[in-house]
Length: 269
Image 1: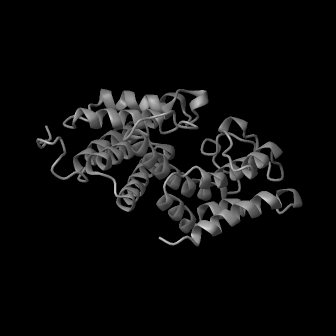
Image 2: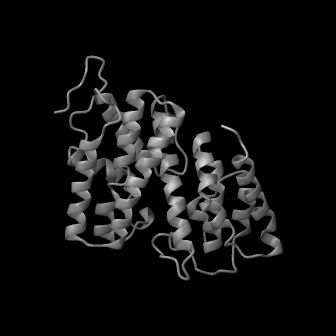
Image 3: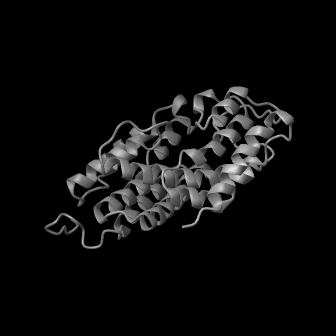
């Protein structure tokens, strides 16, 4: 069992190598028994999210226990995706089961948090359960900050994945939520929601262009300034938005989002 100091803080709060080994063993077992590009994608995604979480923690100066909980929640946030895909052959929660709740079940069943203080158990499990919500419920600190770290880190890598898949002639349907691949169609309600400064809901998406516009609106759904800066610097959302049809009707939302990216990119610090 991990040694814990009197103040309940592990000697090296950011050293989670033992947990990374636990996750790798878990993912490797699934990939041996169920070889799948989709599961490989989730393993890669996990490590990318962990890296983004480390960067956010460093730039936002999180306290040691909060930072450790955020790292662990980032590492384990998508563990539910593995049994989800094996059982239902989809990453659609609507067509299977909420992968956040599945992840909580996996972490408990596999005893991944053995050796961690009880407060970290609570923070990590709550974040895993809530990381995929459309909006967070009212939460006390530090639950709220930890959840924001993981949600921002998750979105930053999803942007990369989406930019790659949307550049393909026929995007992988399970990755883009089974929307219609109709390159010249979009929903005006999605455009109106984004122009009002809000983020559309997944359930309102009908077309691939709706999904592009939704992704662009994520610039409003990132909590930390460092996350927004990292998003703009990556260029992934700009690439996604530039894939929209060059029509007069879509010019307002395209211009609006590109201007938002430019404004954030010019911020100092």
